[in-house]
Image (tube, rainbow, N blue to C red; front, side, top):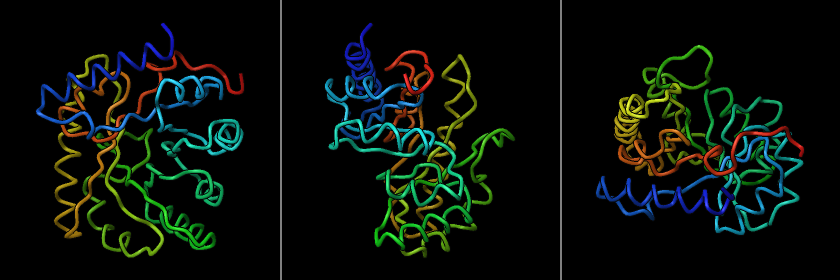
Length: 230
């Protein structure tokens, strides 16, 4: 299967999931996760109509993004180390993986130095996994107001990576909990948080049914990961 045919299949699945849940497919943004895939694969996906791409690592993105069409939109979806904040602010239009107050502060300082502002998502560790970064559902509300006071950051919503399972239905409760947490955060901020980034190759249809507005899909588009650069 080609990248283009994979994208068409995914777009059809998005439409079907939206139809089941009474949503408009235009509400769902497909972010192609290009981690460990070469820039040529990104270009092929872009030629098939995709505009949004996600990278996990700043160093890989620094090498890849300049070789890709300048019209593309890039999101950082992996854990960001504080010493990479300056580069990240320059490379990405959105950072989806803001997982702590201290990291948010560093991103804000980097954006201030550039004289820019940056949309962010707050990452939630929905299952409390020790191997993953992110706020807990209990601690995030306590940081919300001070996060919102960071002048260079724009909180657009929440992001989560639930535990992997071969049975997508097992992720549904995690997606539903993230959607419920968003409502709680909106009440605290007295402002809308329009973005829910949840759902990947194995479970994005369930995520859409539970309100996802961004799905992050890699393997289902590009195939198994290679070793960058390739």
